[in-house]
Length: 280
Image (cartoon, rainbow, N blue to C red; front, side, top):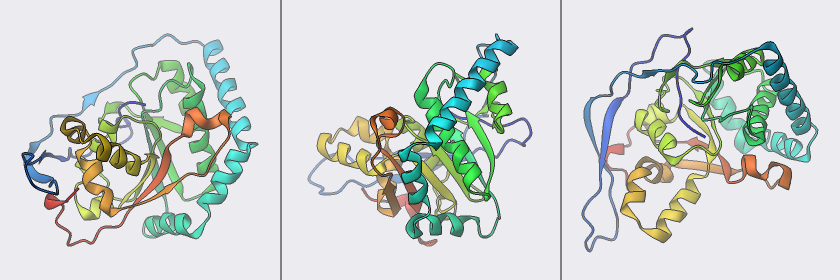
């Protein structure tokens, strides 16, 4: 899964301030510290248009049929039954309701969905997001972005009730209100960008994230101890102590490629916490 963006129907958000994380030289320290320094604002977001602009009614109809079949397949599966039951457990549902209590609706942002025309895992991932929106009336507008999306895919996504973003945010959406980010199997850089853009307790607390397990990233780093790897995941590693993570329950081989290693992530950070000195 890849990067992200902004709809024409919305004003562009103010770009988040640029943050740099400085890791100390390795020595006899037993801990590594992430020191965050504020620099100048980010450059303007990149306007995006589809590279593949070839489309026709037949192509769009075939893709819509693929999506409808995929939604039906997922909806009738034991995976969806287990997943939807898990969403309604108190430890997860309470987090959702806490986030939406002041707003009434919570938008969903889908970053890095991939090509729903070419591959089944992206179709299954989008189907899961659609079924969640149908299930919960407090999920508001659904915004989608991936730089590989074609014009035909954009039209089908719109027909399915999604807004395709037209500015590449690189995952840096600032959460001035509660938002759900649906990002299964995105690259680590995209999660890091999202965290970096919201590196304040009040903004992080507005994030509900479904995506790759942060705990798995931390475990991988603890084994390899690679500073280059740590630098590419610095915010993921630094935030782990403030994240409550719920892995999705086991599922069949039919859905493994689309959802393996995915978790819900909820942030609970004291408003007085100084994230500039967040520790690994």
